[in-house]
Length: 462
Image (cartoon, rainbow, N blue to C red; front, side):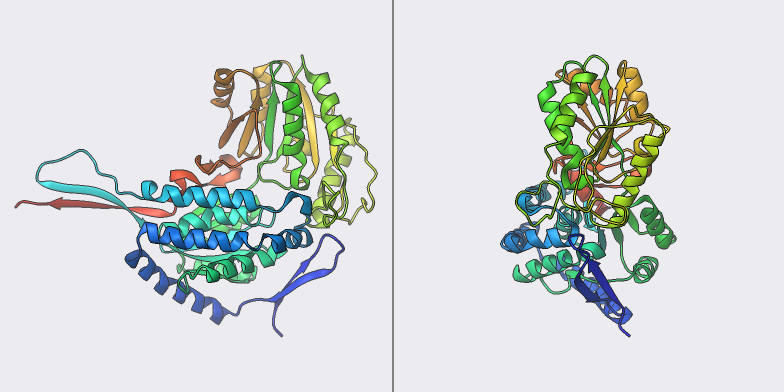
């Protein structure tokens, strides 16, 4: 019997998509096609020529957006009112295509008479992208576009929760006329994924997912010496200072906390507020949160859809229950149809009187819940922000840029924001520290992680 992957829609629990898992023979054949196509791609195309293919891919993908938006709602629950991921996909693709000539240019050290010396950035070969469901287009684009621009071939294994996204990528590349074998979307089991990683036939893996998943990737790839890019967990903090513009901070932090039902790698999961503005901030934050409309994501009025799976919602419910047992205060208590154990529909929640003995302030929630703590000063805020096994982003809300930068210097994180949050700037590296993983995407650093240096030391006269 053929093994299949079934996608259970969070909207109504129905099986929305079912696809057969690729056979081992099909996976091996895909790898061989990728290897052959990559050699030609790296040797026979210029960066400018690759860019034309990638921009044609982008236009093809954007042309499908009217179909993609409801598909995302059915697959992972994002409300149709937000229009999918079109804007971010276009921004990142165009930026990385435009950056490629500069980022991939040879480096020439100081002149040495009688020698020609330079360093080239060679493609790694085959890049294996294991993409997540929460931002299924954006996270995949982060690796796929620069990998191809750098001269690599790409094999994509998308999350089972967003199976149709991989198919959309394949269709867009086919429409763009990308040479066969350079990009291939495969439906694979966990066992097949581990075997491919262990085979030594792929040269780099970019994985976005859980810490446990990252450890499994490293274990499977052990001994192959392939390179890895791992973006794993997050528990991103915010610190609100007394001189912050309060209405701006509240509106943006509410959105940064609850957008996508809180299922954001860099979403705000804990907030520290200076005691001088704590009461004002909490009052405004609670009032803003109560404006959310939780319901069917296909309804234009819905501003928060279901979580992707019921088990994710149940974990958040457990975090809330534990916090309440330990003395936390819940401020929203919104009544939502279907909000019960075993359901992906979950109302947003704001907790105060929280501390770091509670799971909700220490363990990744990845859902629509946040704890807000009062702090006396910068020292206390910094200590609490660093009291986490994760480090993806941290946001600081103040009118003083120098002060924000000085605080950021002391926070263990990959990105420091001031007066904004929950955003990936393609001009800056997207990276993390501690259990958030290693490697980096976007910017010139993203290209460095998808290439290898090769030195040329040529004596011209003997």
